Length: 208
Image 1 (cartoon, rainbow, N blue to C red):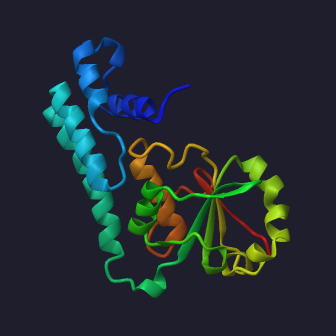
Image 2 (image 1 turned 135 degrees about the horizontal axis):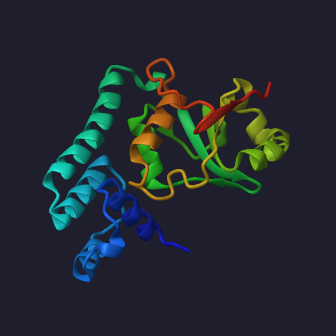
Image 3 (image 1 turned 30 degrees about the vertical axis):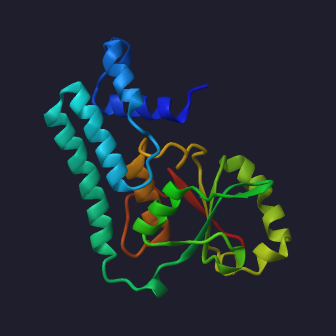
């Protein structure tokens, strides 16, 4: 089973269209020596730059960095003038049986960029995002509704429960950064963002 770092390195090298099997061991060792505990957009951009420097691919690096930078700044710019009251409080859970609240700093950072406010309190949540397999989650929804803490929350009352049908979502910061931001932006701020991802990376449950 691959580690998160191995998954990340493979993903970034694929973006550079480089097969790590063909890289000199010395360069590969240097790549794996780069800290991979990524949280912010700057972390991800700098990580991409470091690998690009080691691969000696300045033009490709500039292209990849521009894509990352543009993605973040477009989202931030569109949400520049919305107030805190227009930013939903969001709880992210990794499955429902048992319910495991996602406290990843990376996911929390993505929520902030995408127009939400991260919370770990069920009673505060305006939206619930479940990261799990679709069929498994649908089977577990009755358990969610039978819990009074969840049932009385605004998120349940207003049908603001969403499934991200990709169990690896947010698990390897930097691997699918743009897609993860776009998914969250569509869920959290649908008035401002449409990427056509509903039904592909996420769905909304109708509970009431």
